[in-house]
Length: 388
Image (cartoon, rainbow, N blue to C red):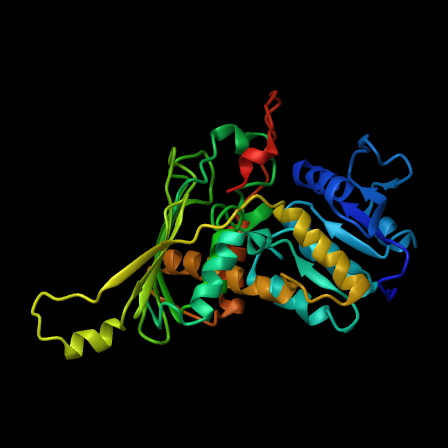
């Protein structure tokens, strides 16, 4: 494994997976990332990528990793391949950035983290929404204590609409075998990461999921989860890929105020004194603390994926702290797994998750699952429309 300084040569980066998201990441590197160059690519079929004439192409990820042509790899393959490919890259000592989720299950993620033994080896996950200035602003407000101790959380995130063709053109997507789930581990994994990043993990989850409610798929395309936190706070998370236009509303209610995001603007409401103090002291039977409202919506025009890739490169070259260390990807995946397990077993599930118990339940479904046959149809693809 190579170690680098700020004055070192560019990081030699290999891209494993040249599907839609892999090609997007190549564009990010070519147009917005400094300090690296793409020296190798890997996919089952050779693809001509503009600007990569000098990069060597491989059809086997192991040949790319063993080639000596790369210092780091970015894995952008279907979820079912993440564990095997990431394990090989980690064992060979390469720096590693993996597309979300880290694996089919929390147990796969835990095993990958256990393989990451070398302190100088950078291991990151593509949790790009952590770079969204709006969510950064929300986290700063919560961490500063501005709204006081959290009393309630609520995120309705149903504008992940996906038409049937989205699933028809993929053999692995929305199958237990290929993805380990649907809505929760694909689209909403970003929201679950931000949810727990800002508000913390709950201690228990009671959920209700619908499987193939809106699409001809075997996995979940709608989920409602009730959360309980260690301080007694409650929460609600609702997700769907079957609603149009859908809703994106995120509220965090604290003892001293509220953060409210309506999908467009972020409002900060602060009380002149805490709710609990006012409630005990007032003699006004219908009184309420005086509240100040501020619009604190930041400029959100950033290239989130490019920022994560740049941060990964900077961590290799300059020891810059990671925005999304791979081990932090376990939290959102554990929450997604807990929501599924609660729905399967029709009971509350405690966190930290018993990942072995979940793995057993998942493997029962994988055993009855199979990859689908891709539909041979022409589709229009604009990846910018896939982000929320």
